[in-house]
Structures are given as C-alpha cells and as structure tokens.
Amino acid sequence: ELGLECAEVSGNGSRTYSLKLRRATFESVLGHFAPAAKELSEADRRRGEIDIVFATDCISEGQNLQDCDCVVNYDIHWNPVRIIQRFGRVDRLGSKNTQIQLVNFWPDIELDEYIQLEGRVKGRMVLMDASATGEENVLEAKRSGEMNDLQYRRKQLEQLQQEVLDLEDISGGISITDFAFDDFRVELQRYAKEHPGLLEGSSQGLHAVTVIPDDLKSEVQPGVIFCLKQNDESRNPKDTNPTFPYYVVYVTDDGIVRSKHTNPKVALDIMRAVCAGRPEPLYDLCREFNVQTRDGASMNHYSDLLDAAVSEITGVQESKGMESLFSLGEVGNGAGLGFDDYSLVSFVVMR
Image (cartoon, rainbow, N blue to C red; front, side):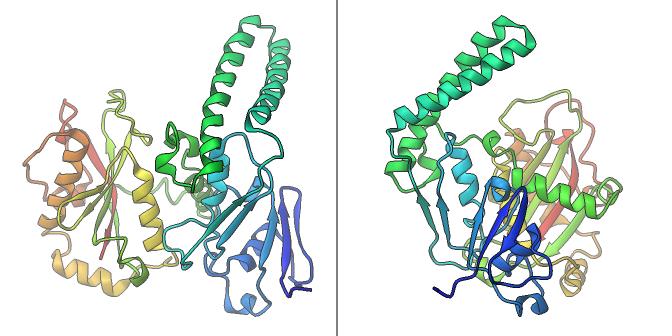
C-alpha cells in the first residue's frame, strides 16, 4: 500500500513479503536491506531493495547495516547495553546518512515496576539454578549480584529514556566488557571459517597500506594502527587493556596517539571503515610505500610512530633504534615491562 518492501529475520528463519528472492536466507535478506554495507552485486541489486526489516536480536551482533537510518525498539531489554548494541548496527563510522534515529517503545509501566518484574524472574531463575546444583550459598551470592546489577541498569535506563543517547554520559559508563567486541568476534569467526588455517599460519610483522576514503577524511587522519603483543603474558599490568596480551594503538603521522590501548575499539572501528570493500591489495599504493621505504629498509618515520605507541603503553619515553623491527617482528626480549617487552604483530598504514 505504501510501496515499501518488508521482510522478517529471526533465529528460526527469514522471509520476504512481496520481493522475490531466489532464497530468503538470513544473509540474502540483510544484503537487500543494506546493499552498500553488504557489498551486494549489481545483479542482485536489480532484484530490488528491502526498506523495513522486522528482526529479533539475532541481528544485534556482528552485522553492518549502516545503509539504514532508523532503529525502532519494540521491546526494551533490562540491560541498556542490548539497546546500544542494536543501535550499533546503523551508528557506524563511514555511514552515508546525515542523521540516524533511535526510537524506543517504553513499557506502559514505571521503570521501577519493570525492573522489579525482571528481578522476580531472575530470582526464580536463581532458585532453579540453586536447586539444580544443590548449593545453598550460590543463591545468596547470585541474588545479591543480580539485584545490584538491576539497580545499576535502572539508572542507565532512566537516562536513556529521558535524554538523547550519548554513551559517554551514561551513568557509570558502558564497560568495554559489555560489548566484548561482539562485532569483531563474529566477523573473525566468519573469516576463519571461510579461510581455514590462514590466520594461524600468518607471520608476525604482517602489514597493509590503504587509502582513507574521501568521506572519512574529516574523521580519520593519516597514520598507522599498530597491533603489539606483550612477550611475557604472565606479567599482566592490569591497566584495563581489554585485549591483553595484545595492544592496539592508533598513531597519526604527526606522532600523536589518537586511540590508546585501553580503548582499542576506536582504532578497530577506524581500521574496519577504511579497509571495508577492499579484499585485494592496492598495488599502486603498495609500490609507492615500497619506494618510499626502500622496500622496508628505511622505516625511520614508522619507527618513530611505533616508538610513540609503545611509549603510550609503557608510560615511558624510550629512544632506541628499531630499524630491524618491521622485518623481524621483534621489539626485544627485555626483562622489564618496558620498550623491549613487546613484539609487533601487524600494522596498517593509512594515507
């Protein structure tokens, strides 16, 4: 009636209404819903696009749907992280949309009543768990922890209900463990399944060169994203690095650390955005990089940037030559948690 194509996606299956697809699978439906993000072929695009998708939380992780500009939550999960995960499907670096919207249908009861209902359900689940394990002390510990978490989430939900969504302002913050890098984990699993053994057989010091798309140049500056690994994994510095023993740092060409190792998701989001849609090397750019670095023999500039990255991690300014680093992958085998305690896993040069 309105000329809009609709589809459904759930864990039990997918279907379209009027749009005819060869197979209405999970991937094909989302491909026609977000053809640019999913890099749908021209032949498939001619079949038509889907305007509205009704979905369960099966698409709340690991999906890039940035063609879309509006998310409507018909149910409000007690944990606001779930709401933000859904919004993260469209609120992505590199989106072509000038505006994106999040619409929430809040339950027709007070939040306190909603949280209490959730608490009663969780209480029953804890009782069932305790009866199954036969451990009475589990009940008190779990109940206390669950109830504290519910009250913590209630405050966050109140803010989401009354204010414009801004992760930085949410009471108590959104911990990086709330997301657990779900998007990247799903993408990694998908890639490993499609290319078995390729990642495991990769050598250290692997690198790539890419160009920053024009539409991202206002947000992303030329520089390098480094991935380092601490040689001695038994010595955890406990500095809130969520990817320990790996460290991901983004350093711009002027030597400024733009994304610290304590918040690697920023650098990973940038890397994904600038590398999206480029499955093959940019040969002209690679040749230019090889000429400028004399095939890796003259890496002074990138050594300085790596120095800045390691200094950010250790908090200590070091001044050591690292010309051999980029070919060998080793920063050193020093005894202390300093400059010599890291190996270079890989890096991406962005121009």
